[in-house]
Length: 228
Image (cartoon, rainbow, N blue to C red; front, side, top):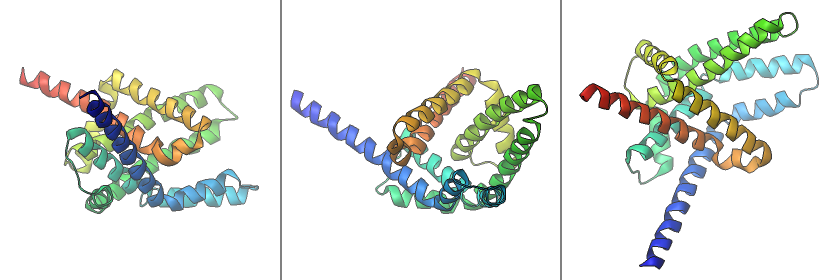
């Protein structure tokens, strides 16, 4: 009996490792154009190349990054809700196709917000230190908002306006969820800086799993409160 329990535990751990790694690799593959551009951006030697790579990333983000990431969150949601799938690849592709149009439209909105914020950070970085730090804080808020947006979109079938309203309410209405997402993000960035292979096999899918888990706990808490 003890050996059976141990083998069951090992099998379960291996299955979850496989799940995280397969979805993370799919996410990286679907984001390959942006990943390639980011590497070129990091190693760019002149301003003209840097600007060109940055513009290309901005143009591709809505049609590449957002649909790929939304599909990842949708698959992770299935795991947390206990909806088993025979094929991780088919499940990812199903959600990618199903939500591509909405993910792209919302991706343009979110990319515009990020572009405006980053432009202001660069502009004020040398002239107004106080305003720059305020903009960095807004960047943290926008990061949490973006993560919550992926969770809300994965869990609800809503129009774009309602998605934005619900995400805004969750982002600013739950300090615990806000802090949890920041802590998870910081820890994963630190781990990836120490072990690069975590980024390749686990970082994206693990962050999506932790973020949606925290979001779903809040959802259940709110649902329980409504029923009482």
